[in-house]
Length: 175
Image 1: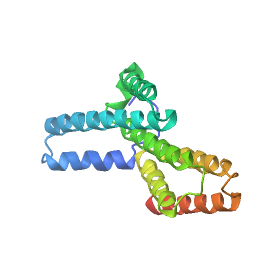
Image 2: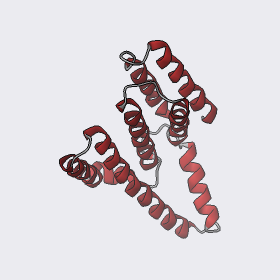
Image 3: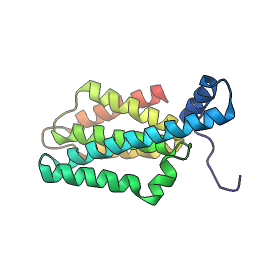
Image 4: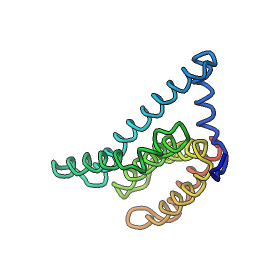
């Protein structure tokens, strides 16, 4: 290739191999299948972006409309169109990042300690994000630091450290 890359990402490779296996190794059929699969992931990400917008903006018709408009504008931007449905890991990774942001926003909306299942769920999702794209280690670090930064109010730093540790253990177990 002529483009610099950091390699092929494991989850995308696994899913692509599964697509080829499902069609018996037929290259043309596998490529068609992967185009549909990539498009489905991109379409699902639009709904995730909308949900994230609603979570951040709160209730109300204006917030709902703004969230939907934002998701549609995001999806139709030329950069997203070319990177989300290209049969690479970028669409899959984008969906994972938006899911992490959504779970993170939902968890911090209450401003209280996180239940342990939520910590583990975010850790698992961060681990899956790593499988989608290995530079998700930076996403993992950012999520942990942001989580620690929310200590105070009803949640002690010690509790946030324990929650972040649970996330890290779950992420490490998955990745």
